Length: 259
Ligand SMILES: [Fe+2]
Ligand SMILES: [Fe+2]
Image 1 (cartoon, rainbow, N blue to C red):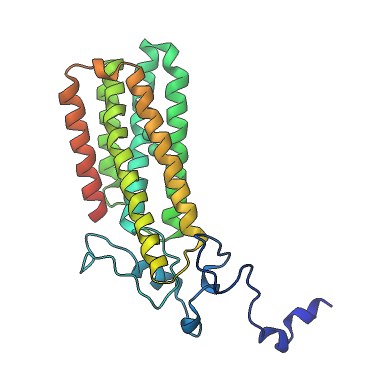
Image 2: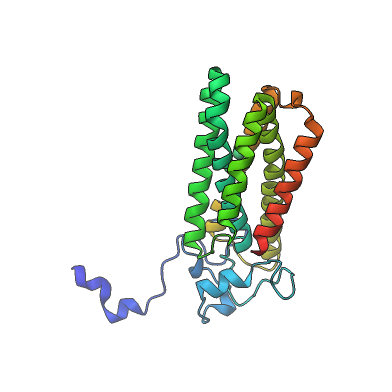
């Protein structure tokens, strides 16, 4: 009978867990993060929003320390400011390639598939972080228009300097972005280790985030390899060009974490 599932007696039954409730030895086996509170905390209500925000460390937070709130299940994602930075960075990447491609391809038609491939991957990264900031109610950077103008200008100006300079731009940007994602992945893995040491299980959500970050990091490093293979090092003056762009990326990351 369809109505049987809604009888009051059934409602009093605890939910059936798809895994042993006292199993803390696996990283991401949790189908529903809020079914998995430690035994002594089961009676408390987990607030998803409080849970997420309580675990985040941003420059604007009072302590700046990683202070997990032990009241709740460890279902948090990473810092909201990092999702904001990631989304802004991917926006910039799509605009750089969009500005570079017509000029580069006009002079070097054989690079069309490569430029299209890198643009398509950046567009995918941008869509991923658009979804994540929407899902986790993280506001985009307030400097969205400024980054848009600067990224387009960077792409256009380096492409105007030639193929080598355009590739040196990719080399510089991807070097910084690769480091940025690596740091984020390392930080999340450290948080997971700490939470497990405290006796918590980690939700599938954060495992998915780590997988996503690793995939995107690998694709950024693939772009870096393509740039070097296509003579990024021959840009003149390579040290100045890449130094300025890398410093600009670090500055943009720092500002986007805060604004
Ligand atoms: Fe990207
Ligand atoms: Fe990239």
